[in-house]
Image (cartoon, rainbow, N blue to C red; front, side):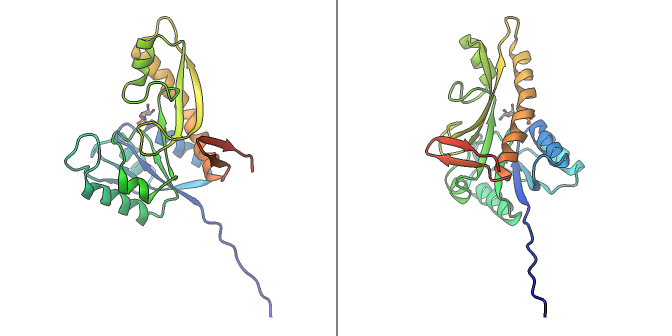
Length: 214
Ligand code: GRF
């Protein structure tokens, strides 16, 4: 009698959260389609019913759901938080990718996915956390800014840094022109970081994130 075993390689699954147009999500989905990220999108969730990110997902025939955020303006209320956690668990996601999700994640959500949530922020953290960081960079007069992909912890834009890419600030920049150039660079950086996470090439040592080629 022959004995054999079949090893089914489970594909790494992403849960994506966004509130806006979803250009970072589209860049990640394109990279998956191009075979650059060994992952699949389990579900896309949004706190904004008409968000572009949901349309992008539906156009690609991915599971996409609007979950009302509840009574607060900058965070999810308890019921909503439970709804998000349940939807992400039901989709069996390995990594939560925040792609322009405009609410701070708290307690139970962070505990449910500890060490498995990443975000992209449009500045070179720890400079200029919070809102409109391209405007903060211009107002401060820095000559170089950029974007950062980082793990999410209980702080705001504060977790260990996975990757950064720089963007020069030009003398004739307006907030809009600078924001646009940062956005373009995000579409390069985020897929690279998600690919490294999906390949298991990322490890965390205290605050330091180490990249190892597999
Ligand atoms: C990006 O600028 C990102 O840095 C910030 O939210 C924006 C999302 O843009 N966290 P998009 O919806 O991916 O186009």
